[in-house]
Length: 257
Image (cartoon, rainbow, N blue to C red):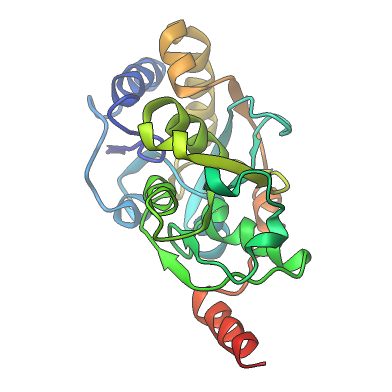
């Protein structure tokens, strides 16, 4: 079986994630001794051996719904978000501090990947609702890489998962050169999933108990406040905007007018 908690796993949080999994496993009838690391996320999420992983809302609603079971949603206690929800943070360089989001129309936008809720879907919906169209699109492969692209001048602004932004501010020196511009509306946070047909109640109970008994330092490191029961409908109701190809076509058309 596979246990995988890779969405917020970085060197500074790895030990806390290991302790979290150890506590979860104590409340299960079985499971691997260690977390899987270094594997392809899609291979993990689609594996019939998947016991537990965390995915993103956009992959869940567009490709995984009906192929995996929704277990529960962690609550990270993020500002302006109800339990089990999160949002995206638009960031730019300090030299642009105080600029409104509209000032970034036509400027280079860094995003991690097209199937990211916080890095692509939420910001594109947010920008569209305000009639703001970015300029060149810079795909980076990760939220931290998007933040770095802005910091070193390869992009002008980016949209980051709010929890990832908190970790970047705490652990990455380049964050000092960035500023927050605006936040999107909250959407359901990154859900825990298991392979189709597995017992979600056992997993929910185990995760909930693990959060409760996890040592204070580990819980603070992972920002875990609790576990929420959201439904598939909560995720499926979130809008999915056009992808980068169609967005680039809109950008080119706007440049010609």
